[in-house]
Length: 474
Image (tube, rainbow, N blue to C red; front, side, top):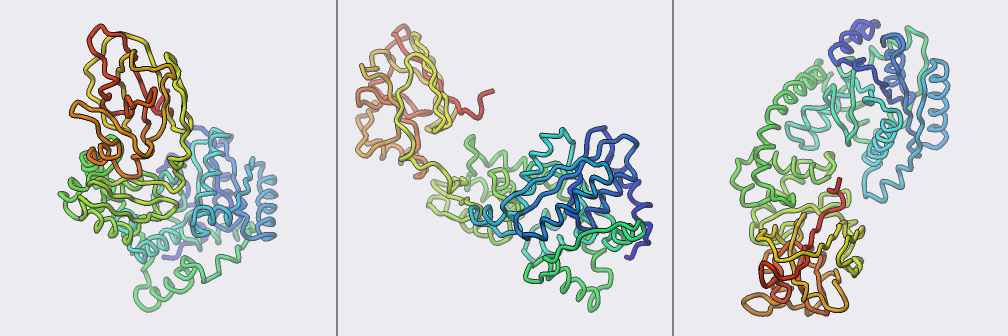
């Protein structure tokens, strides 16, 4: 699998054409750490880009390696100055991010790095970040995913073009070996920085790189890297086809709130069910790195409790909660119900509720429309209440309180009991917006209007209530 020293010169122009790397003419941001791979990428972009094409560099100081990282930044700064390449530098505190998010240093570094990449793209108007992942990185990634029990998606490795944490990424070196990269730099008389942590075999990827892969090459298959890369190529192509099937199945198993219906999920074949779980979790914001075999298996077991309740930790301050046959992803940073303020609603008028994430609008009108309520806590929602139901204190929006009762056509019930019968998940019951006036409950947003609040006739004076999520307002 060895390449000649000029392999980058022969391979890079073909790869660039295949990826339309220099089309359209928008800046490209080269991720440059100072190591051999990223320096070779920077030099190759400068060498093969059309005249005048805007190449920029981005370097992130992770706040981990002290003076060594400072020297890396200075090295990258000097090389970019020599080449006339604009450089954007960022500094992040990865140890603090790891502690705050209960993440490994590697995962926290990735999140912080790509967070800075997003800012750099917005600042420069660049079309993508170009990274220097090589064929060796691809082989290592596939083997690492296999060890961790990933499915076909993970074993598909890295794609030449993809989105990582909402950042468009291009990897033109993905078919080029690391030894060819270093040969290219030596031929040009170029220097690079060596990161001492890359030799630290306490880190799993480094043990795999320095110990396991060489052992597999010596004792089992001299071409094991090529085999891993071919496997990734095949599985990635199959993944594209299977993804469309998974999206269709998930669309039929998720409700408007984004909750997953466990009963519908159980009807699917096991292979499709696992893929649905992974896609649902990713859409709910669970980092892909967390989606290992163990997590998916825990959820498979959880799906057996269609009528019970249960929880599974997803890591990264997220957990999956199963209640009344529906799953939802819950953040540990969620504002507690006790922290949601009691607020007077403008009548008529518009009230913005940032703590609730809602906009509440009241319009004076007559009568009502027969619009079925979407369900408690589902937005947007609309209701009509009688003008006469609004007491002198006006309309108050608040959370449920102990002892709250609400009057329905069949009689008065405890609000807590009604919410349980309506199968509102326990964690959501104390976060639902409750509209009251003079101590009387008139409406739980998204549900039906109580008897004291109902409009008596088509011409009776009334208020129309419209509630929308702030995030969904144009």
